Length: 90
Length: 228
Image 1: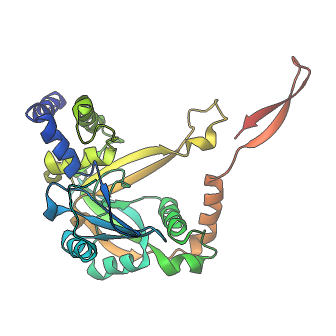
Image 2 (image 1 turned 45 degrees about the horizontal axis):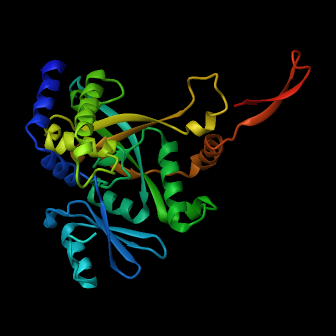
Image 3 (image 1 turned 135 degrees about the vertical axis):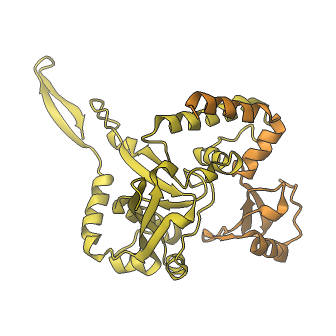
């Protein structure tokens, strides 16, 4: 495919999307890793708060800067062990 | 081996425990998160120096001090040596392929066109890694390309008082592997013989400019002239 045609297809890809859908797509792909305080001294950030089962949780211990990345299954149990978190809260 | 297959020798710095797991499993792990400039994937350098710099910086950020000796560093970190075997047509090469750069730029442009209307992301800068994640996962370039290559101009502060050079940066070339199956022969790299040279290179990398004086016949006096 020529570059001209490729760029046309890219334009169409975006033109077929609403602003809200574009924002969702950006968030799914890492545009906003939202940070929540889940317990004293701990925060976690995750990428995809709209689709809960696909998040990646990063637990940070504020005192010594410890980071650990969990996959979604582990992360869910880590978070649930600390608090009942309202995922919509900022 | 087909003529289109190229082999890249590459280095990956990581925590020792993670590196041992990778070697035992014979497969890389993907790095995910906003610190990764080319999006989700396994990151490599062709130059050992940058992998050393990566683990040196990780050591400092986690231990709150510089490593004091070679043993101090490798107790917690290691560098993996790998071969990346990939069809050159499956490399999304932002450095050397201007069409690829145009495609990347178009995605960035389209994303930023609507930025003013975003409700949740209005104050957020959208990084290159997010753009590449969209290109690969949403626009399905993962079916066409296995690797992304791009270089970044870094350390410009080092040259800020030398306005006579266009080469006022250190070029950091990164290889981001999106398809982990192209990475082979993963072993721990023995840094010991190169350690002294890496320390020396690090000093050069962080080298501050020297201040010298020159005599001006016009001003009939000495003035400071910053040179690197």
